[in-house]
Amino acid sequence: MIVTLIGLAGSGKTTVGRQLARRLQVAFLDSDHILEQRLGCSIRAFFEAEGEDLFRDKEEQVIDELTQTGEGILSTGGGVVLRSNNRSRLHSRTKVVYLRSSPEELFRRLRHDTQRPLLQVADPLARLREQFAARDPLYRETAHFVIETGRPTVANLVNKILMQLELAVFKSDPKSVGSGIT
Image: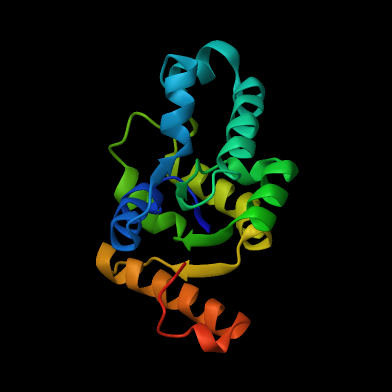
């Protein structure tokens, strides 16, 4: 099974994803990192040189490939849900967890970050609020589970995700309880 983490920039997808992968002893895949390797530059540099549309095309190709890998934890970029093909593939091929954070919480975490291209604006909080308003319904449409991040520890978030996955396994096959996530 592939578990995909979605959410706005700064919601904890990479940090939580790494810990979740360790706990489940599966591979951790970061679609943004894989994209940067393939592009040969940072996402920010690619955005500036080629624009968002071409970036989203490349991202869609990577998501198509990664959602067919078998098992692992997949961390995605914040804008992955902007393409309907990504939403469909993620939802049908993986178990999707939306790490939901308020724009204010994200701003607190990201206010000094200079690497996120969509936040390099005069008013990053306003941008986060706009992104949240536009993307929250798309994240919800794509997700199997919504986890409110707030301020819990990474370990607490990992435990919440594991509980949701265990409940999903129980609902689909009550005899499998206690056998762990497979």
